[in-house]
Length: 197
Image (tube, rainbow, N blue to C red; front, top):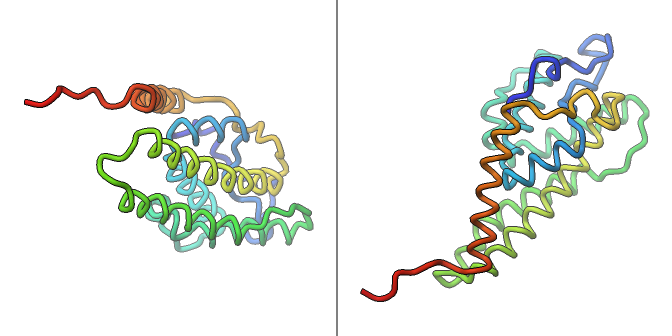
């Protein structure tokens, strides 16, 4: 999901890294929404990684973006706190309840892993899909609020500096599209069995 270099500019508006909090990853809401949903939330890994890369490069912080991307639920609250601190420093008024969003993301992620343990195997495809869709809807809402905050902090509320889809984005969209076709097929028609042997 790598974006082109033209989108990977630090958003410090010419200020030093120590004087600006606008050093996170800007992306348009429409682009974020499409990539997040089509990858079933997988975009969160790349999104978190890019935000920590921007933060590390702008501030010289000793963080490991790759690990913070892979294990994003463990670092989502600190990231949201940094976003909110930036907004407060600039005097930007935007109520997005970062702690609540972060804790909600952690909770939903945990539930998504333990929910299958309480379903009879094999689970009803429609029930499994409904649970997945609900989880995706909640996580998407939480992340969208954070992205709006980042964009406002960067002085680019619409995320116009990163609204175009790159080749890598299109590849992920195609792969995600295959998943959704298969998922809807299973939901509508169920598993195709071979009968008793």
